[in-house]
Image (cartoon, rainbow, N blue to C red; front, side, top):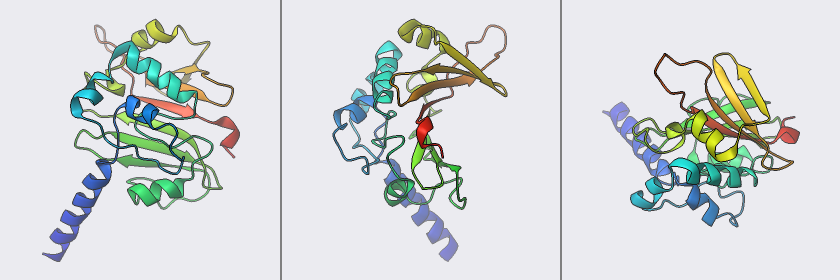
Length: 207
């Protein structure tokens, strides 16, 4: 009974933390003046959130946020925010919480709330922000995007990288940050390559 109670409390706390996430990039933009330590943006109405996570409008908002070192759903700033601020808001990560030095941590909130990753340098500063979106409704959010829709909105990137089975479109919204759209390099015939996740990377902070 005690173990079941602990598991129930843990799930309840996790869902409560997930409720702090704003899945809309518009929410993040409207709170861009909030201190970087405030990593979770307030939630918006479902209708507003969903309408803001489609097509070229969403891609443009991602690009605009990236120029400030941000990703949709967070007020954390790559190269400035400390992972301790995220821990304070969201608790222990699902992956990487026991690692030290330069490492990655992942929060997977489930229940359509999405997943977020953080690259952390040895000083505890986040240099890489990742938004994996959510997999329940792939018609909205990060996973609704395709390489074709990204090119149509932002043009062909000057740099395309490959890592394992991933293809990475790299844009430079500012001198400080790289914006990466990551997806499969190959898909089955007749299928469309959708974006798996986006990164905003501050190279100078990767120490």
